[in-house]
Amino acid sequence: MVFRTKRIYSVVFVVFVFVYDAAGVAEEEISYYENLINEELEKAEKFELPTNANIHRPLDETIRDFGTFDFVIIGAGSTGSVIASRLSEIAEWRILLLEAGGYPNNFTMIPAMFAIQALTNYNWGFLSTPQKTACLGTIDKRCVIPRGKGMGGTSLINQSIYSRGNPIDYNRWAQLINDPTWKYENVIKYFKKSEDFHKTNPDAPVDWEFHGKNGYLYTNYQIPPSNCTKIFLRANRELGKNITDYNGKRELGATVLQINTKDGKRFDQATAFIGPIKNRNNLIISTGSYAIKIEVVQKRAVSVIFTKNKRMYRAAASREIILSAGAVSSPQILMLSGIGPKKHLKDLNIPVIQDLPVGNRLRDHVFCGIQFSSKFDAKRKNITENIREYLRGYGDLTTGNTIDAAGFYKSSIERISSYPDLEIVVSSSYPNDFGRKYLRWNEETWDILFRNNSSFMPLTLTPVLLHSKSFGNIRLVNKNPYNYPDINVNILSDIEDEDVDTMYEGIQLVLNISKTAIFREIGTKLEVKHLPACAGYEFLSKGFWICFIRQTAFPAFHPVGTCQSGRNPKRGAVVDKDLNVFGLKRLKVADASVLPFTFSGHPNAICTMIGEKISDVIKQQNFKKA
Image 1 (cartoon, rainbow, N blue to C red):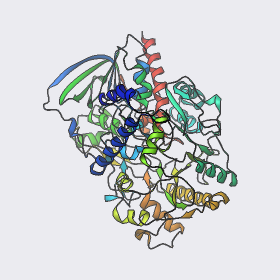
Image 2 (cartoon, rainbow, N blue to C red):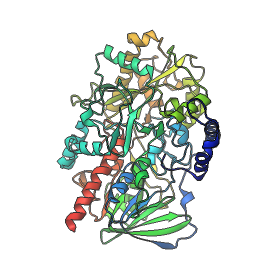
Image 3 (cartoon, rainbow, N blue to C red):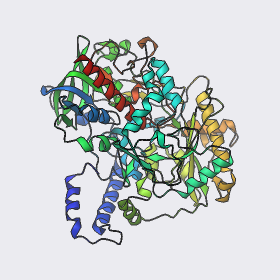
Image 4 (cartoon, helix red, strand yellow):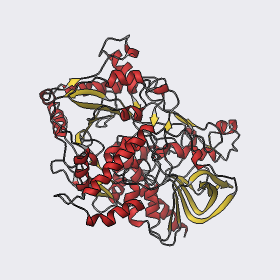
């Protein structure tokens, strides 16, 4: 672990005088983690998500000078951490990395606790506006939008899945922005550059030529592999599906998931990219720093206004400002700076610096869990056993999902051949009140879906819509920088209903998988109940399932597109092929917000690649000027 609290350092120092078990794990360390987990669970029970950023409000409006740097990077998430690491390789450049949150701790390092970690201050706590087409079974019909706050960004609270997407994604993107350097054949080198790949599952298929070995980002497989994964793979073979390395030659098919953990602990992007180089003299990391505005003079971005320790500061950039605050906060900061839709800014009395379609095309993957019971024998361990295994680097606490299986499929609706538009993830967890709180289920929906379910081991097969046709938007509530923006995810809303039809096809695929011989052998039984909101439809009919989807589907916590890249702002673009903001100089946006559509993979790995590539672009641009 790279970042430790002082408290943990003291534990490590005295551990040598403690009693060890047969495997070399100190009993006092086990006790420490038991207490830590129990304390965090107690806190999570009482935790209320913040509704604004008033915690960062300064005591006065006096702006103090924080200094001048070559580059100011806003946000230390999955892209910003990479850029800070790579730009600071140039010794003569001074880099300032601003991050509103703090460092990871021993609790955030436990992968299995991702849902509890989202019930802490490591989550911004965003919620959508009330929805009409999805999340209808939640409190106030509002979707949760977990976004990581801290060094590592959302890689601090996600399930640590490493998923690049499909080559067609990148080729579409390259064509859209008219730049072949974004084609998959050209960006694969950046994926390999960042990766330190280890085949910790001897049975997992691996296309070695697509993986890197000497990068910062440790990538491996769950240890030990789940026996249920073998069942899922066998079921897919029975249905004629391919077994594949989904980050290799062929994404289509069933797979064993690759994850970013190391020695059983979460390996977030800041731990990976900042940890090894955090002591570079030319890299200044400022945590607790909340960016509220980018100052622009004569169409040139010159400085960032931010708050820290209840004071307000200005940091100037002599070369460039790079905004990497994520798909929610990057558009918010741009609009607060006068960069955004002209009418919206004028309505809020924000002086317009540049009229651009910021926040206009919010997209996300969509997931909808289908519950089953089974007689699959998965031995449940007590917390002490789980911690003992965790400290040895394996076991249930070392992964966000104890079943490391997924599949990528093409529906009949997707028009491009060999292009997966559905993912199916297999998971298993017994319902509890933390799950209810994490997703904000309303009482009626929660009780019907999860109360009094079968005592047999639960299995959830979750279809995920990968190519969303629907889009929403992000808008400021007012010009107060400490108010959260309005986030209308608007999933499953496309006029042709292609999104919900694709989800329905995903459910039919899930049902077919559950009926295979191997799933029948473990007694798999559908545990879906008839929801009151769907009472007008015959149970398990298409009408019922579409109603069920709208009640229980969520955005998959993979928002993109709010500062999308392209050739022309009149066609929706905010940044160009090099991620420069149109109409302005010395300002880039580099994070998931620049993706013009939802890819066939999870954004975390993609954002890491963006950080690698755009760092090279910045170096090339600056050395040409020199």
